[in-house]
Image (cartoon, rainbow, N blue to C red; front, side, top):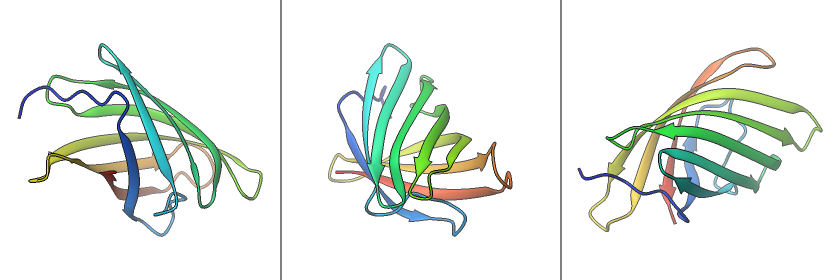
Length: 114
């Protein structure tokens, strides 16, 4: 797999652990400059979210995120994403994450490019 450029790509959650807050209603807009990745996201239980991460040469993302949910809570976490290139040329991201706020539980999610 060649170097992945995430700039201006949009993703939607297609699966998530029960303790996660993103859903199929959550849309992420990724921006990338060099190896620095940022994103804004909203939808479902998320009123507003942001993430920042570093992309390695294989397209893996090491990120930190923070979001305000519909309960008015500020939630934070860490996430590691591993990309999969689909036959249609889109990207699927396999994520493992952990809350750094609240109960500090862990989970897994999958996002697909729109």
